[in-house]
Amino acid sequence: DITDAALLDDAEAHEEKKLTGVVRGSTFLNYMKAMGGICVVCFLLLLFAAAQTSILVTITYVGKWAEQRASLQGTPSSIGLILGLGGLVVFFSLLRSICGFYFPIKASQRLHDGMLGAVLRAKIEFFDTNPLGRILNRFSADVGIVDDMLPQTLFDFLFCGFMVLGGIATTAVVLPAILLIFPPLIYYFVQVRKTFLRTSRELKRIEGVTRSPIYAMLNESLAGIATIRANNSLSFFRRKFEEVQDAQSRALWQFLASSRWLGFRMDFIMWMFLSVSSFLAVIMNEYNWMNVDPVLLGLALMMIIQLSSLFQWCVRQSAEVVNQMVSVERI
Image 1: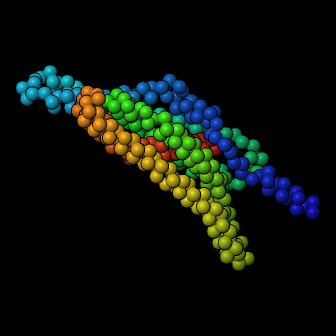
Image 2: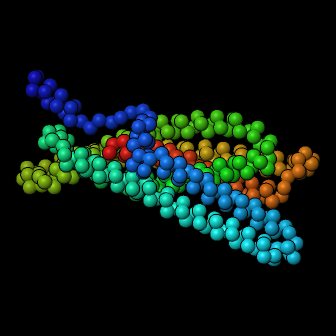
């Protein structure tokens, strides 16, 4: 039938499009430009690196200071150096927190203003071919993710990422033999992260697309509530709403299940890293294969123990940054 074919073509033309594959590099570049450009991004990376370096230097010096005699510990130069290093850590930490949230929030503001300007300048055809729920989805859910969740996720990823790099670097300096197990662990990590990213990214896109019909149905139901009640169609609309809500819930719960799948494997990697590091430290000390500084060894083992939870969170947050970039892509 010609009429049915025309209606089908019209519905397909108005259907919301979902991108597939990796998040394009242009999306990240646009977000960097909204933050202020490449210079701002480089400044943030240097700031996170300086903050983590100051923490490691302070912990190392405090450990060496604790090994000194009591007469040397109380000298003005020693106390002044410790206080100076502590003040440096506080300064870099505060500056990192302020800048780490200020620039992403400014980027969100610029992206929102750009999208709002584009909608206000759009032709009438745009509003005829795009349901109100689809537009509301962009200005509510997607803008909410870029406003509230992406700055916190990006900060957590950078914070945990530099802590992980600091812990691994400290361990490699104290126990160089630990580098032998890096190739298999890195290979396994890359394969697991690639699988998780490919899956979670598409699930996030599906979840974003299946959210639009919920907003559209709420708007249609509220606008036409009198007609729905007059035609006794409450059960039909309730069943239809449950279908679109179930579709969105399925994508959301599959995304949460994939996160648990990743967490278990990241814990296994860190368990292997901690076990091998501990055995190597004992063996090297027992057979005097290498002169290991107790202060640095304690710092390295402390960092590895912290990494057991930080590494999993860092990888999940790195994947979450990519997933939340889908909202930037949609905006």
